[in-house]
Image (cartoon, rainbow, N blue to C red):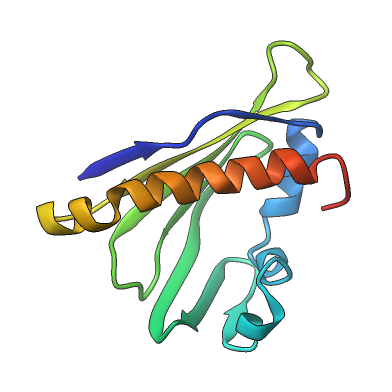
Amino acid sequence: MTVINSKHGTVSRQPYELYMSMVDMSNFKAMIPPDKAASVEADYDTLRGVIQGVNFGVKILNRVPYSLIELVDYDAPLAFHAELHFDPSPADPYKTDFWIKLEADLNVMMKMLIGSKLQSALDQVVDGLVNASNGKF
């Protein structure tokens, strides 16, 4: 099992605000570019779709109010478990220290091919939230 931790980012929202924006998987569909959203289906617990010819799916395994959302693969080509962490910022309780932990079942070849891309993708998600926190979710 490969474990990848994103960088931490301080989001200008309280943990409960950020958590509530992500607790419903159908909210994620709005974040997908319009040209790709047509092939995506989402409800409260799951998100499924096809991107670049690859079927993928994510479902929420567990919700711990205002602190953690656990995601797992759902009809996806790659077995994974992800944790979205919503911790109060030590410097400012009105902000959130957000980070992601990903555990993926990658063989040696897959780890070489996509390991650094997964790290980069997780860090980009954190950066995107930090940058968007000055606007609306």
